[in-house]
Image (cartoon, rainbow, N blue to C red; front, side):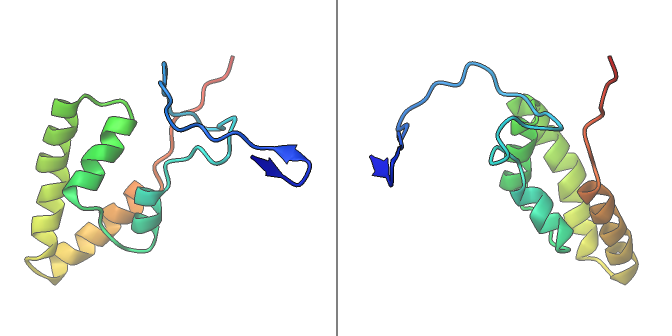
Length: 106
């Protein structure tokens, strides 16, 4: 396909040999931002989205399920139980939104 004088190739099937999370991606479009965007606007991810995010971050399927069910589910249940729990949950959501991967010096 041509876009002006530039040839564009569309990849319809792709086998990814390695996927890793980095602080500065080579491709700016390759970012995990759906969960962070939802959290930044005060929302909570649902369990399947949060599990998917954890899987993309490198956790196994069973690890992601345990973390989501014991962590996020607990926060979601508490947020429904009252205003004090809502304030605590809101604070935790803000902390999650500020999470960053560590950087290492060579």
